[in-house]
Length: 465
Image (cartoon, rainbow, N blue to C red):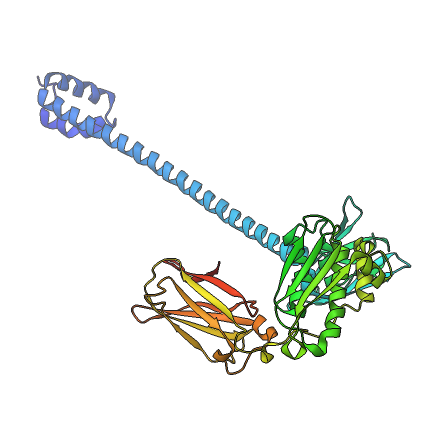
């Protein structure tokens, strides 16, 4: 027993034994002791388990450390990639914006450009000299293409004005012959060696083969300016059988002193209509004279044959091309500043008026509606405050616009330029602006209908019926 180690000694050596620091001879002695001593063997097992747990914890910590370092590297890499993507997208969108705004530019309509045309016969080039009506726009480029009918379509693009993009410009297009037809946007500007005016372009594009096409005939009449010459009128179309006729019924009396000029204008208008409505055989006019001029109803009729004699050529050939139409308009000296040929608003009595009806799309909670009228944006008339419809007319407000509502009687031209502004007051007493300077395009005798709507998001609005 003297060769065996005591428990105290073994327990002192166990830490070194577990760590593998004892000699082989000591290890043999400790093993022999542990085989016989339950107490020391239990202590050894606990110490060994603690050692293994520490090693495992160390391994786990090392592994976690490696994973954290890896994730940090991934995160840093993603951050760099994200920054790179942001830089690339910024450069890309900046390039697109620069290209769209300064290189490609925005297509401009002919109405947005003051221009003139010059034909260079030496280079067979059509030059456009112009400037943009908006002083903040500058010239970018001119592009053109020819369609299957041999018509050249030009487009002018602009960008914000600058040293490289001046407001005034000279642009040439050489892929065109003098006999070609050239469009700028939606307007014909050149045909067979002639500059084409806006009026000619609009009229030519509105031509129609059939007098029975009432909307097309009405559109031609509007472009021709029948209303600006004679005020309010109606159109009656005779299409039951030939000869086909278009009758204009003028609502207001003719000025006696302007009757001769008015009849000449009617003949000019008839020539244009006969040239641009293929199967139209005649144009008739029905008009009244004032009391001083016997207060009778008179008529004027021009047939296609009479129109041909009036212009000195077959009237139907005058609408075959923009050039032919413009030559006729020039021959007729069509552009006139004579104004109205009928009795103006200042010469009429109070029976000449028009009405506005504002309907309520639903029972809205309002106590007052205020309507203000002005010419364009200049309010020179007094404000008209119209109260709520009341029990008799709970669904609408009716306004009769007669001369006695204003400080002076309005002419036909002034009535055509009238604007309407509407405000309403709710039950809490708060006023709401509905519309501001809405153009009415009114004529004496008109009945204008609008609907007042209430929307929880947009508030109040007014819509023409």
